[in-house]
Structure formats: C-alpha cells, structure tokens
Length: 363
Ligand SMILES: [Zn+2]
Ligand SMILES: [Zn+2]
Image (cartoon, rainbow, N blue to C red):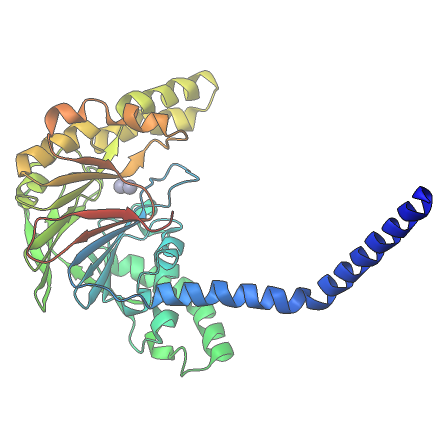
C-alpha cells in the first residue's frame, strides 16, 4: 500500500514537473519580453526625468592615465539651465555620460583643459554620441586653448569613415551628415601666468578659462562655471597654482586633481625592483606636474570654497581603505567638506542658495 502510494506520489510529481517544464518553455519568451519591457521602460523614464533649474556637475571620469577598473579618464559634465557642457573626454568617459543619463545630444560644447591623451582619448566617441543622440545638424563646438584645431582635425579625419557608415545605415534624417564631428573653437591667453578669458557667456551661464601650471605641458587651463549665483571650478592638471586659487575665489565647489606622492613612490620602488625602467621613469616624473591632496586643500582654503572634491585620482586605489590614506593631511589645511570623487557622482547646486547636494547616480 505504502509502495503504491509512493508510486502514485512519484507519478503526480513527475506529471507536475513535466507540466511546469512545458509551461516554462512555452511562456519563457513572453515572460522575458515583459521583463525586458519593464527594464526598458524604467530606463526611458529615468532618461526623461525632469531636471530642476540650477548648476549640476557630473563626474563622468575621475581617473588618470593609469589603468583603473573603477574610474574612466578625466571628464566632468556641467549642466546649467538649458546649456550642457562636457569638460575633457578621458578614456571610457562617454559611456559614463550615457549611463548617467546626461543629455549628450544637447551638448553645446566639449571643453578641453589640455591635450594629454587621458583628456582627449574619447573625443571622437563623445562627438559621435552627441551627433547621433540629438540628430544634430551642426558639429559640436570643441573649445580649448590653441592647439585644439589640430586635435579636432585629427579626430574628424579618424571618424570620417564611420560617419559615412552611420549615414548610409540610419539615413540623413536621423544622422544629418552636416552634424558629424567637431568644430575647433580655440582661445588665446596672454603671457601673464594668471591670464584668463571668458569663453562662453549666454543666458546667465558664464565660463571662464584660466591658466594653470602643468609644465612642460603648455597650454594648460582650468575652467570656472557661474550660473544663478552658484559656481564650480575645475582645476584641469596642475601643480599648486595661485592662478587657480584666484579664479576659485568664493566658488561653491572646487574639483581638483590629486596625486599621492608616497603611493606613487611605492610604485616607483616596485618598478625599479621588477626591472620596468619605463614605468620607473614615468612614476619618477609625474609628481613634478601634479598636485598633492594637501596642495589642493591649501588652494581650496585660500580660495574660500565651500567644498573640495578630488578627481583625476593618481594612483588607482583598488581598496576603499586606501581612500583615507590617499587624503594624507589634507584635512589639516582645509576645514570644509572634502569628498573623494568617484565616477557617477552628481553634484547639484540649487540657484541662489548655499546648498550642495551630492549623490552617485551609478550606484
Ligand atoms: Zn591628466
Ligand atoms: Zn595632463
């Protein structure tokens, strides 16, 4: 009797499993479709999220030329009212701009601080996504110090074949052929070490370029953005800079590059020990044209900014524990809040207030 019951039970379980398996196979596709639809809808909803008026800065890249799984090359996206700008186009930064749902198709301009590879490597991709993302009929302005013409010309040429494929495939309505690539908008600064120039001034948005010291890389600049009583300053690559301190006077947020000398020295020792002469030479040279976290803190204090955020972090910090070590004695020099920048960080400054809201939109 017991055996019979067992056999019956087994039979029922077997039938049930077969039914579930058949149902699974039959409805797998519809179930997956519904699932995918939900994902796509939620992504689109995010894309169309209304944006409050104010000044925004999105960290689309906080790394340096050293490979770092957690950080794209340097890139800061700035949204001010109806205007949108991207400062520097480091490796992999375009992907972050897209992942952060920033309105790349509406970019007024890409601004370059200098022409080191880690700041320009993604320029072609950034231009292409801006063109396709907004079906733009005119190429994006690429604002930079003298030399930007050569960089833009090179990327335009390198992407010419791909531009023609996109037009042939998607049609000129979607990708108007006249909108591909970029147009160089060079500016010149006087010989003075603290020279500056206003490079954009429209609808209450003012962008000022100013000299920094990244010798032997000349020219090298930083940028200040002002909008509705709020301001951010981006250092670009520089040693401790009085010109930067002057330009950052009274700003809300200073985004400053930083290199921890002791950590790079460890890399240098290791490179020498393991017989990597080129890495040893590079790690020996780079502290000479970057700022320490303490230098950046001194600039922040001298300028009287509300908040300091590090980006262009050297070296890579594979463990969160290293972040505190990286800061060194910076807190001794600047009493305001200090944040270690990370990819995905979005800073929002509401108009005419002293609020600073920070969240990571990639987490
Ligand atoms: Zn750099
Ligand atoms: Zn550089």
